[in-house]
Amino acid sequence: MPGAFKRKPIKPGSRIRVLVVDDSVVIRRLVTHALSEDPAFEVVGSAANGAIALARIPQLNPDVVTLDIQMPEMDGLEALRQIRKLYPDLCVIMFSTLTERGATATLEALMLGANDYVTKAANVGSLDVSMAALRSELIPKIKQFFLLPGEAPPRAAAGFAPVAAPPPAPVPRGKPRALAIGVSTGGPNALSVVIPALPADFPLPVFIVQHMPPLFTRFLAERLAAHSRIKVAEAEEGMRVEAGKALIAPGDYHMRLMQRDGEVLVRLDQGPPENSCRPSVDVLFRSVEEVYGGAVISVILTGMGQDGLRGTQVLKARGAWVIAQDEASSVVWGMPGAVVQAGLADRVVSLEQVATEILKLV
Image (tube, rainbow, N blue to C red; front, top):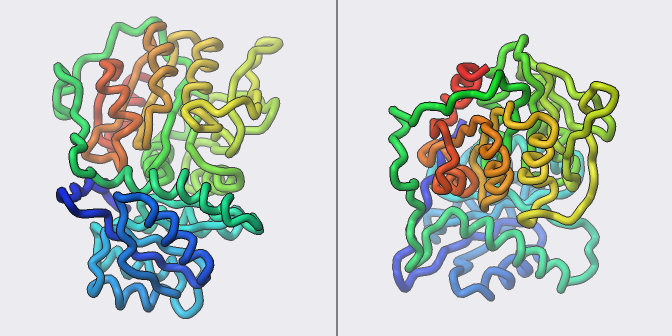
């Protein structure tokens, strides 16, 4: 399993060098044009398949490769395998389609070590729409892996103990009754470490928000279910919450909880995105607090942005336990870093220690 990608500093006067790999001439031109509009980028070349890309990487020395999955001669997955062998620190962003085949291939790519992915809308028909999508999605996803000139690296909040000696947990207000997890960039790999480590008799219901589009969350749930001892499923409207079962919010839907006739049920809606996200960690965490109060273990794993910060504040105010993944093991230390710097984390631990800390509290 790939380790954390350390943010690479870009020297003053330099730009992020990108190699665009796609068998479609139109897509190559669109990506090149979208990136070239941003002064932080320099498109140093393009390639029509993985074999050509592998030959050009040592010639062009890119910082980033954008890699299509479906290509002739050598597809994106095989190219990714070779890149990870030859250039383990090279940032790779996959291009995927919103199809079942695209979703399964993207999850495999993430497990093989792709840093992140963007989705290509099929049959958009408008170049302006395609360009806008590339600007809003691709550019931020590349920039999250680099320190641009004048940008300060993230720092842990003052007063926090190192991972080897985390601060003690607060006095619990009764036993925890639920586990809530928020995660984004790097999430499929992180969840594949945490969820399979939970025992078959895990006594709490588990709620997960992973920032992913529709289809992707279903295949993620299926992949986790196949390798875990607890049950894992994509949440459905009205689904009954059970101890020892993990529910993943479906792509493009917020997941909330409600109580009815002594049971806890799932509610899904397409309310406005929060933190530009739907599903949103904040939405889930607030709803978990409404049902379980502070009897919750909340976990914030690797991810870009600050989704989960406000929800964690709500839970923490009620006495919930808060576990944050540390910077060294995070693909991107945005979400957990925001929680740590706000002084909300009771434990700041490596990814491999997250399940252990959960089980200690249970």
